Length: 96
Image 1 (cartoon, rainbow, N blue to C red):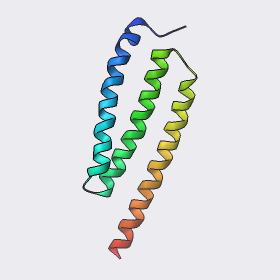
Image 2: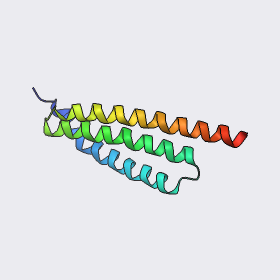
Image 3: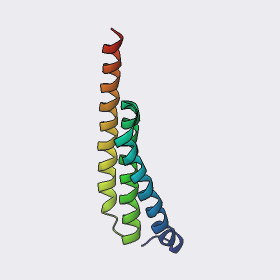
Image 4: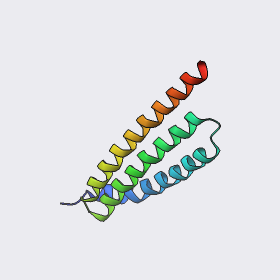
């Protein structure tokens, strides 16, 4: 059972848009004016990477890739929590 023809037709366009967004988020990581901007950009990169994997799974009709997308989403979420905790501790030390 595959995806509908409309989804298969729109997925390459969505893949292109997500890839362009991924490039822009990478630029924000490199040139971000502050650490929270860079952390948010890294979180966006993780989310867009999950989106790319899901779109490739839809295009290639490989549902096994969805497991990889779920694992990456979990790791990305845990990384975001770790970065947020680091930023919070850093701000707490600078206030003292």
